[in-house]
Amino acid sequence: MVRRIAVTGGPGAGKTTLWRNIADAYQGRIVALPEVATLLLTHVFPLPRNESERHALQRSIFAVQKNLEAVHESRIGPDQVLLCDRGTPDGAGYWPSGPDAFFAAMDAQWDAELARYDAVLFLETAAAGGLSITEGNAIRSEDHAAAITIDRNIRAVWSRHPRFHHVACERDFARKLARARSALESLLDRR
Image 1 (cartoon, helix red, strand yellow):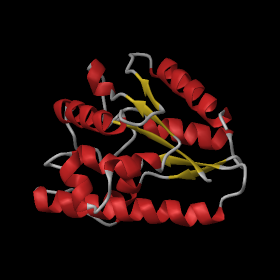
Image 2 (cartoon, helix red, strand yellow):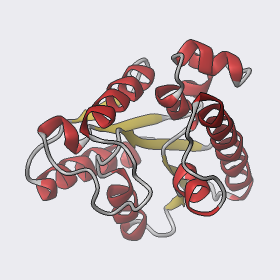
Image 3 (tube, rainbow, N blue to C red):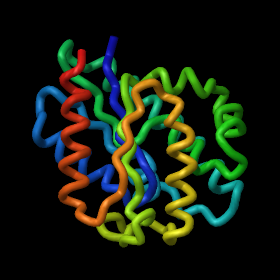
Image 4 (spheres, one colour):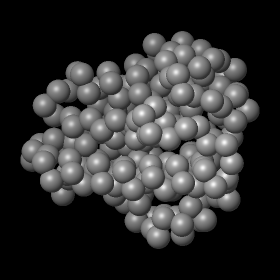
């Protein structure tokens, strides 16, 4: 069975920084899958303006994420781990009418989507601590209040996972990154 670990959290949580850090440190052991939303919003989709456009974007992210994971799963070596910058359940945190409606629209089961991942590392948004969330991501459009709401929504979606690990926001990002890296390394060592 292929092991998948999702790194997730609200906007401006440091997910991609951690994902890159671990992917660089564990080349050969990790197969790093980038955040699909960033790729689509950078190269394909405009920022959504209404609910219909948000639905179209989230449906696309879900489909590309599933297919990207499937392609890499077919190529992965026996001791490698898929490290995903977000996972298929993340869209439920952005879906205007909530997680149940999201999974129904995706023709998916909430628990089955969570079960695709061996573990999940949730990084709390910097907005929860009143810190900037705009550094490092040119497509980020959320203000602090929206980032906190999305963070809570995504946390509620993933917290049902039996191996859910939460890394709280703190003012010293280097310290948060070190705690997150330590937690992620322990997940990688678990067989």
